[in-house]
Image (cartoon, rainbow, N blue to C red; front, side, top):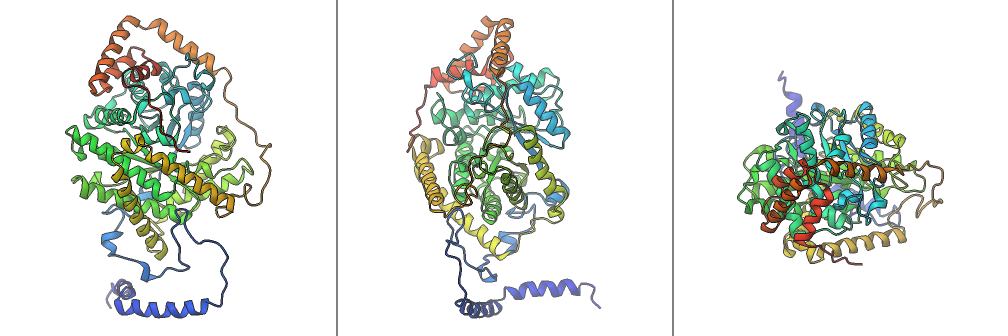
Amino acid sequence: MNENLPYIVKFNVFLTMFDKDYLEKIKIEKEKWEEKLKESKERDVKFVTDSEIPIKRLYTPLDVKGDYLDTVNFPGQEPFTRGVYPSMYRGRLWTMRLFSGHGTPEETNLRWKYLYENGETGFSAAVDALTFNGIDPTNPDGAPEVGTSGVPLYCIDSLFALTEDIPIDKISVALVVEPFTSAPVCAMYFNMAKMRGYDLKNLMGTTQNDILTMTVGYIPYKNSPPNHLLRVACDFIEWTVAQKNVPLWHPINFTGYNYREGGIDAVQELGFVFASACSHIDNLIERGWKADDFVGRLAFHLAAHKDFFEEIAKYRAARRIWYKLMKDRYEVKNPKNLGFKFHVQTAGSSLTAQLPLINIVRTAIQGLEANLGGCQSLHTNSYDEAICLPSEQAALVALRTQQVIADETRITNTIDPLAGSYYVEWLTDEVEERVWNYMDKIQKVGSIDKALSTGWLYKEMRDAFHKRRTRMEKGEEIMLGINKYKVPYDTVTDVFRTSQTAIDIEVNRINKLKARRDNAKLEKILDKLRIVCEKEENVMPIIMEATKEGATVGEICDIYREIWGIWEPPLSI
């Protein structure tokens, strides 16, 4: 008896399912089934995805296109539809990384330690509005906002306090800063690491450094024009990775999550992300680099939103799109540089201040989307985030949510378990096709900085927001507690309050730094920075020198403003 008979039988059945004659038989039987279905009533709702892709009542082998090895293949093999690594979660679980940042660096340090002791496997520093916009706490324009929306990181002393007794050589740190402040904040971090004896060539971490987060994800305050933001973002990529100063660092994190929070859909999210990535790659190629010199360290941060299957299809489609971009457009040779590695964050915009404990359920489902979609890193939102910054209890519940998925559900037993679903495979193809079409639309406008400066991206965001709001008002998009089973705003959940003394602590920190530094020496270095900015040379070497000597984020960004001017975004309302 042939020992391989069971395999042969199964393999032949698989082929028969997609045989032309058998597909015709399925078509005939499906028509009979649909005839019977006419007697059944369906609910009076639109059966569409969040991206308004019409969904049929049933999917069969008739809906699956292409050859398995060409379009799906095995995990770790081109086009990476099923995952970037051969073993995926059977080899290593995703990194559990929660955004943390509030009050002062010391308080954030304590939160990091608390989460680390409870199983967090990656740190992330969400900065406050002043750090985000390059303003020191001594500036009256932003003083009331010190530490209210994230951790204040205004000078190198802040980075020492943030990382006190943290094993940054063993666990990666994500610095959530954008192009306007990524160079000074990260230069402070790198100088701090060097002073503590760490080798930058072994340092692991990520910088957000995302031009779209700074512009369409938030409303910037006194930032420089998009063409300069794009260039300084690429300066950082060039200095860290291409020039191999910090080769294991992820110098940019294209953060589709933040644009998605503004109302755009899954197709637009990937369109924005990939169009922006291409503009950065093109800029670095114009400088004389090859894509293989840096694309392997580019990172991505996507949303996990409310449409369960569309989000999973989005992740699978994203890997395929990135592979094709790298292989066909940029002629990448190194196989390790073809894989699309990404972090996922559950949707903050899906959380409600009404019935906040229901947010735990929403977050768990969205976290499951991310894991079934093969993410490399995950942030699960805290249930109180529609009300305040996460409390310690809420942050622990968010972490435990990931740990329940990892340790109790057994979804990690097999790789890409939804592959082969007629619906999921069809939807993956459909999302991919629509993303390519949307990218063509963006490309006609120009590079990503031009799409910003012309106001085109703002109009896309405006239209998407109005469309989503209309759907909410009509009840076509449901949010429990808001437009179905309405309840009052929650007044029971404890509101986490940031430190009222943060501003005094941070002003004192800055004053102490300025009192001990060599101000005459620093002023000469800052003059050199002015010249570098005027010549549009790479700013990183001189900013490393300046922050080592005690330059603050505000002092460096004020030079950007002085030389490059201040940009007023062409907002659309």
